[in-house]
Amino acid sequence: GESVGLHLPTLSVQEGDNSIINCAYSNSASDYFIWYKQESGKGPQFIIDIRSNMDKRQGQRVTVLLNKTVKHLSLQIAATQPGDSAVYFCAEKTGGGNKLTFGTGTQLKVEL
Amino acid sequence: DGGITQSPKYLFRKEGQNVTLSCEQNLNHDAMYWYRQDPGQGLRLIYYSQIVNDFQKGDIAEGYSVSREKKESFPLTVTSAQKNPTAFYLCASSMVGTQYFGPGTRLTVL
Image (cartoon, rainbow over all chains, first blue to last red; front, side):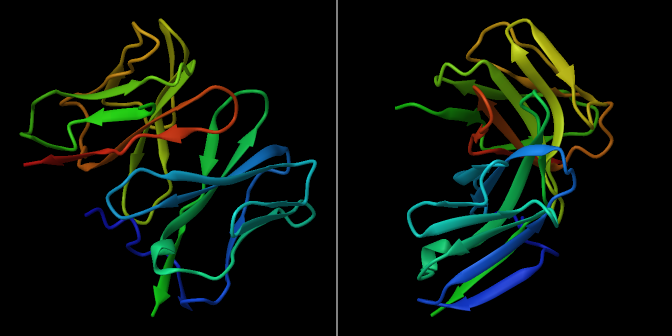
């Protein structure tokens, strides 16, 4: 499959632990942010999103935190499972159009 | 079964050949996008289309061409002018904000 994780930062966690994946975004005018999960050889899957008027949003086992002061986004995964192993990357939207700017991603490895 | 489909999953091209990658969506989304993904890099935008019969160049459009004759379809042609076409190509669509991706096509130049 595609080695999309090649040369990417790697986070290794034990099964059952919580994972925190970080993303520094570039544009202070960005108003919408998305986290995607990409398994090897597959297309990215939407996980969770957040608008700039919020600082926290929770989904099923995932939480996104937004710190606009330092332009930082994080994804927290509770009780990490082997199926969570993948590359995770953030995306930001700036302005009124639909174009997104993507980060390079973090490889999450879950150890049994 | 709604979603975005891309075909073929794997594609091999000889140098000097043009190839066309298919992308179809039945989500009734107005906007569609083509990205290229290389190892260790973020997604790079090739072309995008906000509406039928209209499209714009992205950040790396050289050597590629697209058409948007139908709302559901946004094919990408990789021409012989693209000097380094071996990559994983992803198609996406959106209504507002969130983009949803297809499964991708891996193109290899022999």
